[in-house]
Image (cartoon, rainbow, N blue to C red; front, side, top):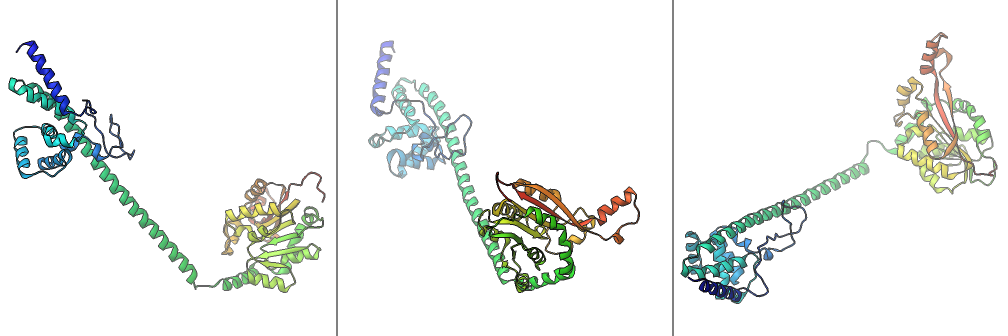
Amino acid sequence: MTNAALSALIERVKAEAATRTPAHQPLSRPALQLPGDSGRVRARGLQQTSASPADVGVERFMLGDNDDFIDEAYRYLLGRESDDSGRRHYRAQLANGVSRLSIAAKLRLSREGRNRGTGTDGLKWAMALTAFDSALRPLRMSFVTRSAMRRLERRVSKRAALLECWRAIEDIEARLDEHKAHVETSIETAVATARAAVAKAAQDESLVSQQVLDRYYLAFEDANRGSQESVSAKLAVYNDWLGTRVPGRRGLQHAIVDIGSGRGEWLAYVSAKHFDAVGVDANPVMVDMCTARGFDVQCMDALGYLRSLPSRSVGAVTGFHIIEHLPFDYLYALVAECNRVLVDGGSVLFETPNPENVLVGSHTFYHDFTHRNPVTPSAITFLLQYHGFDDIDIIRSSPYPEEAKVPGNDPLTERVNGHLCGPQDFAVTGRKARAAGDLV
């Protein structure tokens, strides 16, 4: 064949391919588009797109067995189901080594395929090569296009395998999401059931009523804290504090608020010194006892009572053997409320068992089942400082009697007696910082 004749043949093939390929779809290198845009999975070197399965391209024909391929190609390229004769025809071609890509191109170039005009990325090259192969076959030069078709087939097969992986990954992700939702629902149900059981148990609890426990605690106080007279005698250690740290100005809602007032020993002591005082206790048995003695005592939660008071309306807040009963978050909030309700220059005083005494910290502290943990002087001092109190002082009191001490006056004996027989209680006092020009 002359060069002129070959050039004319090539031009004719180009013209025929142009008539069989839509003008708005120029020949281009096939690109893999993968369905889904979950953002959770990426293959090295590939960019996931938001294409739907309909946008996937020729890779869709490479999946499944031969019958699956034929059926899918018919549906997508011809818009109908495959017929028996067509299936037999293309099965035979596949058995003779014709590639799936070539068969898809032939379907698309058929009259039925051209009328439907389905655009498929990656198939345009196959269509052009098929047309070129048809033109060259009479000249026995079709080996050129067959070689190119094989290369294209291998490329598309790799993309089809990737597509299958993507579909498997998305299926796994969907199942994982379903399993996660099921687990979360199961956990929520279990938690709700447990909470309901706890609430019901608390509601139906009938082992011991709170009223019985309140009476027990009064009896415990009477048996272990000492008589009211003996306790009142110990309170004289705070005379200096009363005289110097409790503001005497008029117009306060209360001079002293005593939280956890118990049997009323402190209320009796300060009332005898002509201080206006109100008590707060959550034990109605204790409140009834104090009320019967003529004291003003509110039966309610201490923190709730303080929060009901106006700011800067109280001269002093006291609490005897109360802070060791409180969880830390409650104690923290209590100290903050004390600072708020106190007038500038007002004071707090909290007495508690002294864990510096080894016998107290390791033994006698735990006589009371309602004690949570010992409070050290350092810990409560820092808490007051943190909330803005100054002039903090520690007052230690109630040492063991002399006859309980180890005989001797040498340094070692004195040190042992200090740890074992020292003060059984201590009180921390602090003052709310006084504003400039404030009068006491």
